[in-house]
Amino acid sequence: MPHHDLVIIGTGSGNSLITPELEGLDIAIIEEGTFGGTCLNVGCIPTKMFVLPADRVVEAQESPRLGVTFPDPTVDWPGIRDRVFRRIDPIAAGGEAYRRSQTFVTVYAATARFVGERRLALSTGEEVTGDQVVVAAGSRALGLPIDGLRTPDPERGLHTSDTVMRLDALPDRMIILGGGFVGCEFAHVFSALGVAVTQIQRSATVLTKEEAEIGKRYTDLARDRYDLRVATGVTAARRTESGTWQIDVTGPEGDAMVEAEIVLIAAGRQPNGDRLDVTAGGIELDATGHVIVDAEQHTTAEGVWALGDVCSHWQLKHVANHEARVVAHNLAIAFGRSTAHPMEADHRFVPHAVFGHPQVAAFGPTRAELEASGTAYVTKTQNFGDVAYGWALEDTSGFLTVHASPVTQQILAAHCIGPMASTVIQPLIQAASFGQKAIDIARGQYWIHPALSEVVENALLGLEFPESD
Image 1 (tube, rainbow, N blue to C red):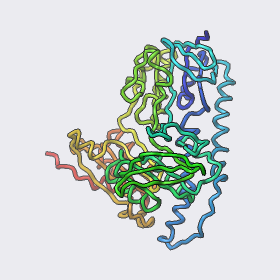
Image 2: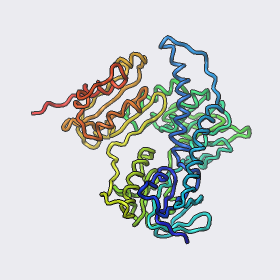
Image 3: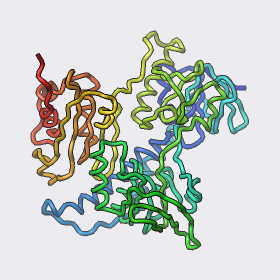
Image 4: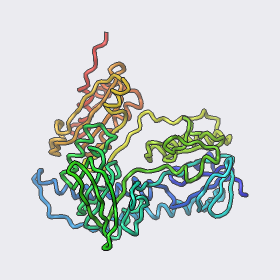
C-alpha cells in the first residue's frame, strides 16, 4: 500500500498547494477528471471568454443611442468556441505533464473514497495513505428532481454548464432552467449569439441572492432581451421522437409548454464530499453536504484539511484560492518546514460577480439581511447615469448601493449593477477589508475625472452619518 507524506484530492486550487516550502515531500495528487478543476475547464475562465463576444454583440445593438450603427453581426460559433478551448485545453494538459515530471509527485488518475483514517481506496484498485490529506475535490452540477431532468445527458441535448460550451453548433432554441448566476450568464451569451432563449425561474425575479432592487432591475432588463418567465415552475419534461425537448411549465399565465433543441440545467452545484465517502474517514458534513472545516481549514478528522467548493458555501474560485493559501501555509507548519503562526481564512468580505448584461457585483449583507439581524446601517444609492462617464455611456439602468455602519462609518456592504460592476466595486472591497472609514476613502485620495469610478466616490460622499457628540 503506497504511503505518502501528503495526499491531495483534486487539482483545481489543490494543485497550487505544492509551494516551495513543501517541495521534496512525498506528495500524491489524485484527479478523476481533467487537471485544473472547474474554474479552468468548465467554469469561470471559459464562461467569461464566451461572455466577451456576447458583450460585443449587445454593445453593437445598443450603439444607436450613441449615434453609431453597425450591420447585423455574423456569429462564428466554432471560431468562438475553439478560441476558448485552444487556449484552455493545453493549460490543463501542461499542468498534468508538469506534475508528472516532478520526481517527488505521484499522480493517480482515479476516483477516490475514504475507507479509513487518511486511507483512500482508488478506482484503480490501489489503496493509498498519507500523513496529511487535503480534500479539494470541488463540486458537481445538479439535475432537477423531475422525471427526464434528473440526470444530465449531453448526447440527448440535456446539458449543464460542464458541457454546453462545447456544442458542435448553436441550436435555434434553448431552454435554460434556473435564474442564478450560471443561468443568467448563459442566457446572456446564447441570446446574444442568436439563439432563441427561454429562461425559466421559479422565483419572482432572477438573481434572488442579490439586493432585491438589483434582482428586480436585472429581471426587467433581461425580459427585454429574451423570453424570461419568472414565478414559473417546471412540471414535466420529455424528449420527442424528432429530438427536441418539451418542457411543461406553470406560471402566472397558467400552464404552457416550451420546446427547444437544447436544455441547459442551471440548478446549482453539489459538493463532492459524498462521492468521496468522507464520513468513512471521520470527516463530518454539514446539513448541505459540505465538509465542515474550522478557521484554519482543518476538517473534523486529524490530519485532514479541505478547501474550495467541497467545503465552501460560496463556491467561488477566489475563495478556493484564498483557502489554498491558508492550507499551504499551515501544511508547511505541520511538516516542520515553517515556524510561522498558523493562518486563518478571512471570509469577512467575500465578493462575487455575475457577468451578464449588465454586470452585477456585490459583497456583504443585503438590506434585508441587515434589517433581519438588527444591524444599524446608513445607505446611499448612486446612479451610473448621474456621473460624467455614465452620461457618455448613456446608461439609464446601472447603480451602486453602499451600506455603512453609522457608528464606525466603515463599509458593511456594496451592491452594484451596471457596466464593469465587477471592477467598479473593488475599491469598496479593499476599504471594507482594511477597516477604512467611508469619508477617508472619498476624501483621502484623488478620483480620476471623468472615470466611472466616480460612482464610488459620489456614493461614499452621499452617505449621511449621525453627527458625533
